[in-house]
Every structure is written in C-alpha cells, then in structure tokens.
Image 1: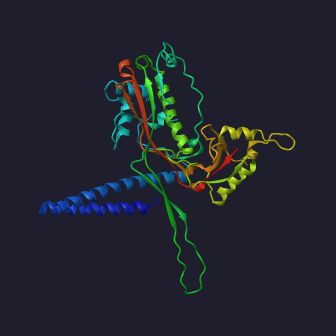
Image 2: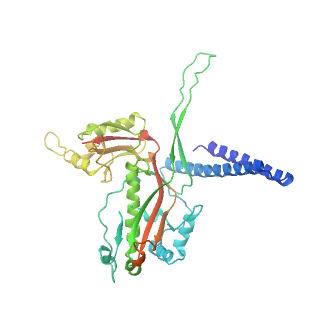
Length: 409
C-alpha cells in the first residue's frame, strides 16, 4: 500500500472535518437548518468511512513490509500474553453469569473493542492451531470425568496445510478490505529526436475481503460441566478449534459454496494445466506455467493421498521406484485428505495444486466468539448447555497467476 494513498486519505478526511467545523460554527452563529444537519451527518459518515480505510491501509502496509522481509504477521503486539490462558475457566465464569476475570478477562476486553459482543471472546491464536456432538458422561465423554486423568490422546484428523504452506495471515481486520494490485504496466519505446513519446497506461485490479462466518456447536451435559476439570480444556481448544480451522482450510482450498469464501479451486482466475494419469510431465507443466508468469516466490505442491499413493508406485524401466523428489522436480510437496478428489466435469478427479502460497490471503476479523446457551429446549431440562463458536474470516487469492492446478485421474 503506497504511503501516498494513506496521505491522500488523511487529506480527504481533514477536508471533511474542516467543513464539518465550518458548519458547526455557522449553526452556532445563525441557527440550525435541516440542510446543514443533513450535510453535517453526511460528512460525518464519510469521515468515519475514510478512517476505516486508513486503518486498513496502514495495516496492509505493515503486512506488506513484513511479507517483503519474509516475516510472519503476528497481529497485535500489545495484546495480552497467552501463557496461562484457560478457556474452561473463562467459560465457567461466563456461564455463571459473570464476566471473565484475570488474563481471560483481559483477552475478552481486548477482542471486544469496536464490535458488538454477545458471548465470550477468545483469541484465535489459542483455539486455532470445526461435526456436532453431545458430550455426556454415560457416552464417550464419560471417559473424561475421572479422579485421575492421564493426558488425552487425540483422534486422527485431516492435516491442515494452508498456513503451513505459507499463506499470508491477516489478523484484527475491521470493515471490508480491498487488496489492490498492478496487473499491467505501461510500455517504453525508442523515439527520434524532438518527437512525442507513445502514451501507455498501467492497469489495476483488486481483490476484496469481507467477513464471513463459520460456526461449530457442542452439546455439553451437566455432569461434564460440573465434574470435568483438565479434560474440558483440551476438548475446547483442540477439537472445537480444529472444527473451525478445518472448515476454513477447506474453504481456502476450494470453497465457493453458499456463504463460503472463494478458494483456490473455485477462483475462476486460477487456470488449469492438462491433467490425466499422474506423471512428472504434469508437475513440469505446472512449474513452467508459473515461471511463464514470472512468479518468483516460495512455491510448492499440495495434493491428496490418492495422488501421493500413485506417485510412490511409479517405477523406471528397471523396476526401481522413482523418488518423489525427481517426480516433483525438487519442489516441496505436501498431502492432505482435505484436498478434494471430486473435481472435474465428472466429479471424479484429484486436485494437484502448485502455487506461490503467500499469494493466498486468510483474514480474521475477530477472535472466536463463544456463546453458551443453557436455555435451548434440547438441554434446558437436563441442566446442560449448548456451546456455539463463531469465527469471522475470509479467504482470497490475491494473485491468481500465482497458482495452477491439474485434474489427476
């Protein structure tokens, strides 16, 4: 984001504030009129909108500086520490009708600034590293109500890869965010002495991000709420957080459904290369496509376990297995069952994605909003509670030319 853009916005806001001051002085001297009040209110709305644009522009400028230095975007440096944070403590205090206290209360207040909050705000960094289930002591959750509890072993989960691959993470967003980019430059040419130069224009485009909500729900029994101590913490942090992160990870890969962000595979500006049965020629074509578009950032392949299984079985003429490093030409390759195996016209192809992953932007507008509802008909008569988790986030491919994918049989 150019500093000139920020200065222009600040100057525009200053002019509107100056005009508002003139209107105020005029009304004090000559009295109010509907026209003056309407003009004042319109200027006030415009100034507030510009303030939001300035805030977002300054954040984006900082993120772009960090990205240029290959640093991780870490969010608000003045936020409270996460060391010693307990989600179960915060929920217990909130469920009892009071406010979260201590470190948990500090985080709630920090994340509640400038927004309407109905429940308990918890930091995304703590919960995110999204199925609906009832936790009852007589079912599988009974294993968590104990006198002495060893460390809980987690269930097998799909690997979440977006942040690991290097996606750019934007935190603490406010309002909508536009990501401008230069899509075409002017041209230079040689001219004779004392002749006019040829005029050419640069072209620009933008990608926009706006908050979209992903939610998950748990049903907690009365005994779980009363008896579990250390057991509830890893569930809330690992399992509930995983559900939200899994939904966001899936949307970043494909998305495009109702109320979903538009991910890589659903972005019509992301092009494909010819696929088919997996060979090293396909991976070479994917690499060449990005090289042709002058993509120079950190790149890598992401696919599913089906493609990886096929790749591991490829042998040379002597029957020796060809190493993956040769099949993928020395590029990084990762796999996850999150990568779809139902793309293409017949909905039966596997996705093999190659990209400069920093071109994928994931934005968070808030912490995780947790709302405990003990009054729902499903739990009120049982003394339990429903726990709802809401996360406002969005995903956008800022530079579509930074990605290609192939449909693999």
